[in-house]
Amino acid sequence: MREYPQLSDFVRLRILVISKSWRGEEKSLKNHEDQEYNAQKVTQDYKHEIEYVKEKINYEREAKAKIEKEVEDQDEALRNQTKRMKFYEKLVTHEQDYEEYDELRERLKETDKRLKEFQEKIAKQVNFHINYFFIYFSFSFFLAKIY
Image 1 (tube, one colour):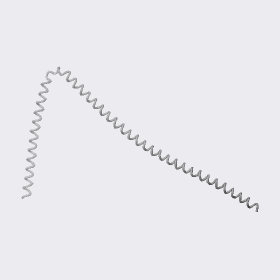
Image 2 (cartoon, helix red, strand yellow):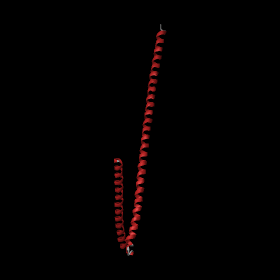
Image 3 (cartoon, helix red, strand yellow):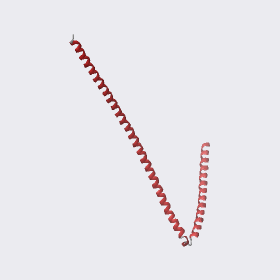
Image 4 (cartoon, one colour):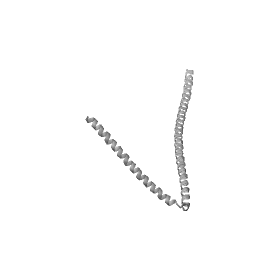
């Protein structure tokens, strides 16, 4: 009977060692799974952050292009205004050289006035003819309905 208790102690000891090693393996497996989950979470977070940064870069690029276009437009407008200013300055500085300048300006005003009067007369005649044809066709249409 003596061997039996020794065997029993040996088996118990073996079971104890196996159960401890099994628990240790279980803990390490759980830690490994947690680490794998954490790695997946970290990579997912980085993916989201990368997408956010890409969107922000695209937005900034579009804003920069828009600002550059506005600057180019303003530069073009400034160049045009500078050209006009130089032209007007040249006119003003050389105005004394033009003896007929005032006379030409008056003639231009008179011509503009006559042109406006002529345009008004033409507009009245066109309106008269349009009204005449409208009344004529309306009356013709009315007569055609009656008869």
